[in-house]
Length: 360
Image (cartoon, rainbow, N blue to C red):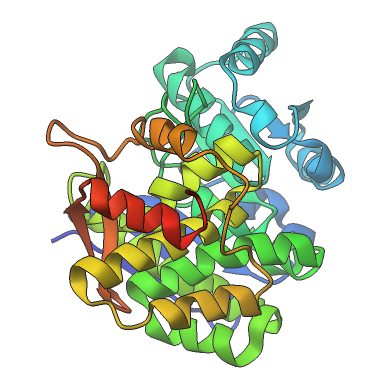
């Protein structure tokens, strides 16, 4: 049976998650304080099984200083990509391919990505496709990336819709320095909280309780380790999303459409999408915590509606959702907190979802 293992060496203040397929460890996630400010940055970032001749660091403007610091320890070159989803374009991917050509990159070399969720998405895609695959290590610098985007081996770029071109490929390692996350501005903590709360609703009721008790002041180390544990467990069971991995898409069917149409951040869009999914869950499955969910999202300062959007446009974007199949659109819904299921939805469900977030 596939599964995720974690260990917590007390002497190092480090939590290590191992994402597995069967008995094989395919990726590891290191979580700890000050991992990128120790004298052993190279040992933390570069797995022992990789001995690269060259290291290329990809980063976004907001993570430039940290990327340069990491690169100095690795004797690496740094390439700054556009910010947020402006990086997730095929033209940007091609530019990086050509840069790697100029560096003389080989399959034995290493890409290190330092940045938020969009950066880790596109860097993972580049690493998976250049030379048909080179190793990549992800260093998330936002809460959203640390609890979601950098974990699990999904890569992608946007081609008309969110992440419609991509591959599944595990990073060799993910390094989460909680000191970096603790220093984030509140706006980024709030955005990442949406994905962390989602992890709680689909797989860890105690994480929901934690946010209800502490709001955005919830201890970052506990939030991160709990949220990663949920995702690592699900990914280890179903890497290529043939089954339970689709549970991670809770809130994303409407959320991705809202993100594209409104041009808002991923975390804010997922919060709106969770309200929509909660309403359908209540209608279809008798989910009893839809009101509680909306209240928590509002407590965290996250949006719960998107009333200025055109319903026809949102429906058209939802039709591009990756979870659709020959039978039509599917949504991840909740029987209860911690009990998700993927359900084929009809037009009445879609109307319920959009009405819940004031899209009519």
